[in-house]
Amino acid sequence: MILCSRSLEAGQAAIDTELLQPGLGGYSVDASNVRVMGLDLSSLQSIKAFADEFIQQEGRLDLLVLNAGIMALPKLELTEAGFEKQIGVNHFGHFYLTQLLLDKMRATPSTAGRIVVLSSSAHRFGDVRPDDLHFSKNSRRYTPWGAYGQSKLANLLHAKGLANRLRGTGLTAVSVHPGVIKTNLWRWVEVMTGGGRS
Image (cartoon, rainbow, N blue to C red; front, side, top):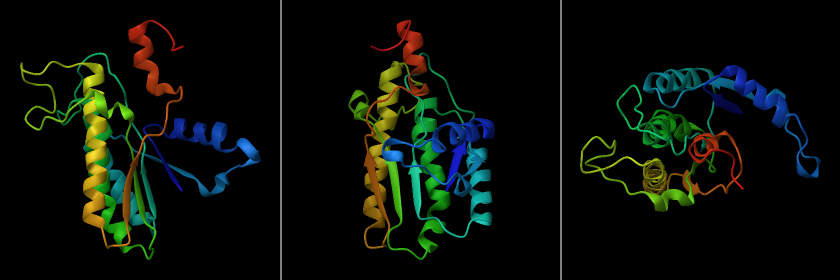
């Protein structure tokens, strides 16, 4: 299993503090089967470098979980490619990664290959506007939740489009809302509201 992280140190710390600890029912993961690789979804260059290394080093790809994300940035930020940062990381980063790895997944001798796109019920907060995805025109005002909602709706549309294109290939694509738990994903919400959530 490959765990991707912007920071190799943070990725290893997650393995050490989470995966090595028994979960509910005493279940634990054999951490010797987990490897950390660097990947920054806000950088197209990082995504390409990761995909090239993965394709060269790994023999197969059975499951791709598109789980990374940022949420409710208080002000408009852009990626180095000029994308509004939430749709850049949450959607375009995952989309590009998927496109680069899809042939590897197709070549894997398996009838259970799956792409899981983590979306959110917050997809209701936004709409995808192809003429202004990046809030660069005066007709569209940036809001933290509107931008997040747009990115999550784009995730749903990505999964649906993939599922349609992969029909009959043995591969599937699905999208799920993972629920709500307190992680660092909430850090900007806490900054904006002046504290933690109740």
